Amino acid sequence: MATGKKLPLTNNVVLDQASVLELIDQLRVAVPDEVRQARRITEEAARITERAGEEGEAVIARAQEQPSPPMPQLPSSRWTTARRTARVCSHFAPPIAANAER
Image (cartoon, rainbow, N blue to C red; front, side, top):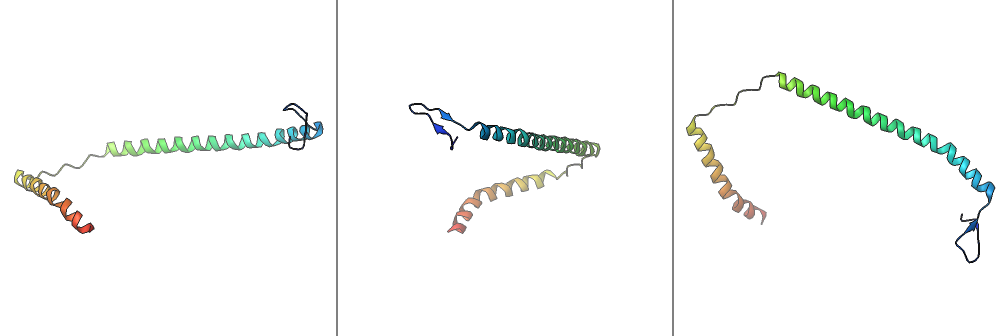
């Protein structure tokens, strides 16, 4: 279209028929290759996604077959001490962090 001749007083352009037909033939040849390549990529992505899903399900199944380790039972006095320590740390940590940043 850049080499076409513009018709006066219109937005129309006169194009060389041979050039346009040659361009159309080139597109007919090139597009199917691109479509085939895109289809291969899409199919490969689908296979990878399916395989990842299967592997994920297998991991979950293996994990569910194994018994989970029992939670450690601490005496209530140790829990109380742990809670107190956590409370003290959460109270003093922000001012200490603010001073450290200065």
